[in-house]
Length: 223
Length: 257
Image 1 (cartoon, rainbow over the protein chains, first blue to last red):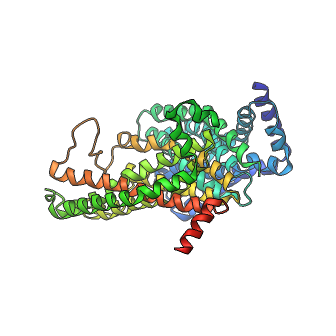
Image 2: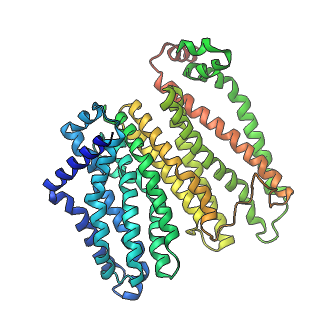
Image 3: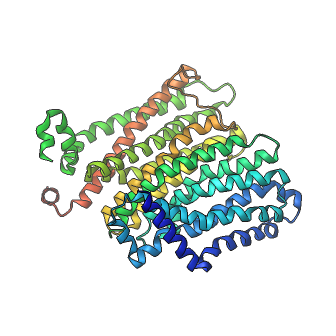
């Protein structure tokens, strides 16, 4: 069972490494869009500091959304998804492996780059550690929930936009507790509570989302 | 599936439920009575609530929109469960009929959610001084509307009915994870919105004179919802079974009469 997980994790990481350009674009998007905020709203650091936690979280969400349909789309087009479906593994394990690879290629770089954005948006000093911690857990949730949407829309020609519509309502609890973690740290409150809820969401997503995505793949990829 | 009906008579209703034809004929007999009941309850509740219930001490007459707002919100939430359960039954027992019910429940639920949001906005203006507040319950109602729209969009994105049914059933089930959060959101965040007025565990914090017409309206909305669900599902049955003999016979009989 674990072999299905690690085999697909390794395979997708290798594929991402070979196509480094694709893998970098969510990160570049994340940084570029955040430059629009001072241009569009205000360059004043006091007001930027107020909205920085929310902005960084929204940007991370959008960057994940942009790349999430690639989880299964390439495999669907070149036919390797069908090979996966007839393999003897419990389908959820390879799906979990692919999702983990997606997180390592998008969520993890976003998390690591977020302090840079924090500096650019003048995030108060006490917000950095909670931001990195909440993004590390939260982007995992985003990848896992997104994998269900990606599996549901894999066979549709214009699936990308529909995928965002399906997945965004499911992302809302994550973003609420993600930015609440950073905000309560900035306001001087304990931030372990919202972070713990994010952790609970991640645990529930790891348990449930691969099963739902596997079920969805069996249904949608046959036609 | 023959063993199912041989097993015991108590399973027969479940077996029959899978037949669109049986559903069509049975609901055809129920519909006039149900419609009459819904009409009576709704008109009685409306007249009672709008004309005879006492004024609210603080909100005056503006509180009377509660007689539309609360039943619509009730059914918007219950409708999502009905849709998700119908989808789950379809996935588990592979019943055509429950997919048709699920597909019919989505637009009705979306319309009721919109009605709840709209009446809430109209009510918010005199009481909170603004049409829209980013409050927990208002926001979760909006998320519920998005969930409904997602199920609808996914249903129609597929060319084959079968794939659309199963995919939106999975999405509806995934979305049910959000429903407890909607209910709990009132406890999680303290906001402008008043806490839930009607609780099943304790007596309502409303005066009985105001509460009784509300109860009638809620019952009326349930009947109305059932009527709407039956009508939508019957149309869906006719559309999907248009090549079957019994639908053709039905159409011929209509034409002759």
